[in-house]
Length: 166
Image (cartoon, rainbow, N blue to C red; front, top):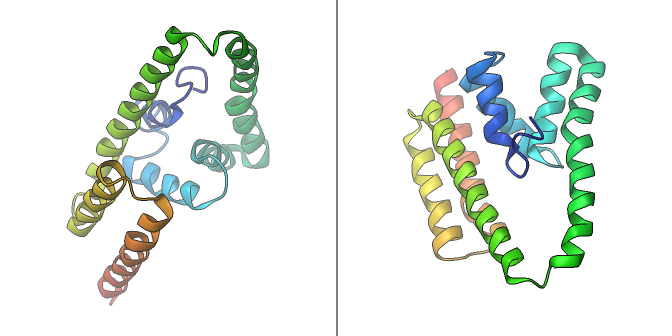
């Protein structure tokens, strides 16, 4: 997976884990991803550790981590050497701009596909729209957006879950 989705592994992981292998449901994937995002480090690495641990314990987590990091590390080191030689070329800048657009598209597509599992939480859609407006259109800093919308969304969800449990 790490080589297939170099620069955007999350969509590949969702494709393999949920749709191809059916090791997780879409809801389980979203819930695991939410936990992975709350932990320090790259989301996909945290997710791979969780999935590896789920199936084979510590050995599975170690194998998942090695598989997720080994080849990309080698590739990044090779690309770093190449970039040092060709960084000043216009074609290099254009290639990197195109790659960033592809990454944005992959992340947006995955986000929208996974959001379908949360369709009954209308407030979540409004909060997501608010995040998009603040970050993508108004260019507000992420820390401010997390403070402005993260805490209220957490409290709203906590209230919804506690009300539903009664």
